[in-house]
Amino acid sequence: MSLNPLLRDPARTLLALDFDGTLAPIVQDPTKAFIHPRAGAALFRLAEKLGQIAIVTGRPVAQVRELASFDAEQVPRGLVVFGQYGAEWWDSETGEAIEPSQPAAIAQAMTELPQALVQCGVPQARIEDKRIAVAVHTRGLDEGAAERLLPAISALAQAHGLEIEPGRQVVELRMPGSNKGHAVHELSTRLSAKCVIYAGDDLGDVPAFEALRQLRASGIETLNIAVASDGQSVVDEFADLSMPSTDAFAGWLETYADALSI
Ligand SMILES: [Mg+2]
Image (cartoon, rainbow, N blue to C red):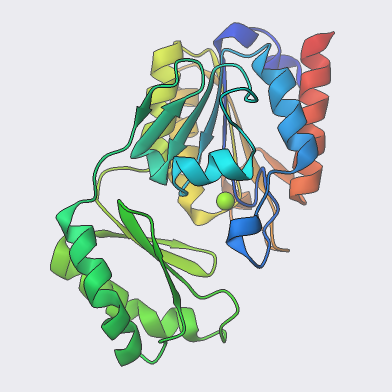
C-alpha cells in the first residue's frame, strides 16, 4: 500500500496509536509490556514531522509513560497520551494533565468484586484498580474463566450504572461515555486534521476505527491499521492494512518516518 497519501500534509496529520499489542508486544506480565524499542525510536522521528502523535489506551496514563520510558526529559515532541479510553489526558508539550477522581460507582464495584468472583467460581482472577475503572484479568487461568465471570460482571455493571469493556483475557468496568472513538474525534478536530491514521489490535479499538470511517466520509484521508498480537487478529475486518505482529508494525512506523524525511 502506497504511503503517498500520508505524506501530503504532515503538519495536519494525526497519528493515533493503541499501546498494548500495537506499540508494545503482549507479554504474560502486563507490568512488563514495554514499548517495542524500534517503535519508540520511530515515534521520536515521526513527532518531528507530524502535527500530532497520540497514544490512546485503556491503561492509565502513568503506566504508559513508565512502560514507554517517557519522562519530562525523554519524550517525543508534542505527544498526547489519552489514558483509560480518553478519560485521562496528558500532553508532553505543556505537561498539562487531567486525571479525574475515582467515581463512587467504581469504588463500590471494587468493594463488591472479590465476593462476586468467588460466587462465580473464578476467585483467582486478578483485580486491577485503575482508579477510574476496574479491570478483571483472566490471563493464565483456564479458558472458560472469562465466560464464567461475565454474569457477575454484568450484574455489577447494571447495579452501578457502569459500562463493560471486553478485551483479550480482561474485562473492564468503567463509567459510560469515554471511548477511543471520542478521543480520536477530539484530537482530529483540535488539529483540523487532513489525514488521520489509527493503529490498534483489540476490540476496544473498534470505536476508533469507526471514528476514522466517519472522518473519511467527511473528506479526510484516513488509514486504519490492524495489528495481530498474541498470535491473533481480531480487528482485521475494520482495517485498510493488516500487520502480522507488533514487530512488523514497528517496521511500518520506521518506513513512514523514512518516507517523511526524504
Ligand atoms: Mg491493544
